[in-house]
Image (cartoon, rainbow, N blue to C red; front, side, top):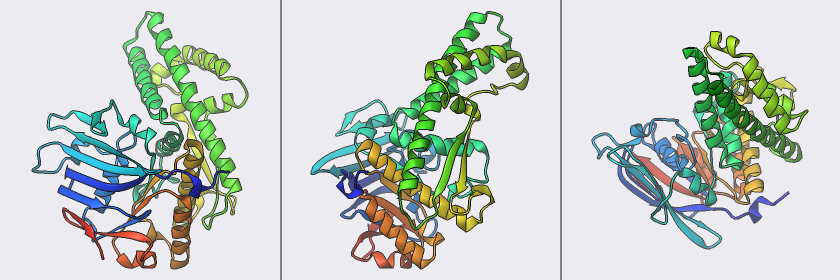
Length: 377
């Protein structure tokens, strides 16, 4: 196993926001591995984390429409820029939205096509209060979480998931319209089968690797027993990908009438679920207490960060929104220790500065007030 402290660890050295959410103009310089954003509720702490999360493919930790990120009474667009440093080398990354609604991405001020290009420089992971209901919520939320896990180690996974969703919508439309030319449906189902198997295989490999790492790791947080529940994933455990792809295509062909009546495709990785158990108690996570679920999710997040470091060769940037308040002082100190051991940069938020008092001299403390970010001490 690769030691976390031996991995390259991209760190944000400078963050600049323009017309982003509550910030007309804001800039901060960062010198530490651990960063604590403190301030009253509603001051704009989560906005900072969200701006950083958009350096990963997708819609960020809030999953908001990009137009919502533009400051009210601003230009209609926004810009976010970071300067990162790793192994003595620096790079400037930027993303934004023009006043005309055009998404923009830049590396060292040169345009790039998408946030996928940022993955060559850093991987961004996060944990937010909105994820607290993950184990009790709908399967779709766990699939989205699972895809974020896979995206952390495979930067192309998100694009495949998006293509699969579009292909499924296309097949559903063809079935709804009663298209008689089977060649259209054959082509749509061939695409779904290829993409579906690729998505399922990436999910399965990520869960397998993560489960193995969890078994080999030590943490103050309870370990999670994780598995995928899905027909295509189960097939991949028993047969080569090409054979599974053919079986999936045949299933799609044979279930057209059923799926047309249902109004959706009932077989495929779009119906899979992530099963999580509290390892020490051997109990389904959904049946655990709220505190146990929070600790289990924190442990899973830390394990995923270690996996990303091992598989990409770079310690990830980790964003933790309001997590310190969940834990008692002893477990909170253990959390800080594990975060330092990850080797990468960690940004945390909290309303109470006392939550981070023990990090004095070990973390960058930033005071957030409406529209402003400044050194806390």
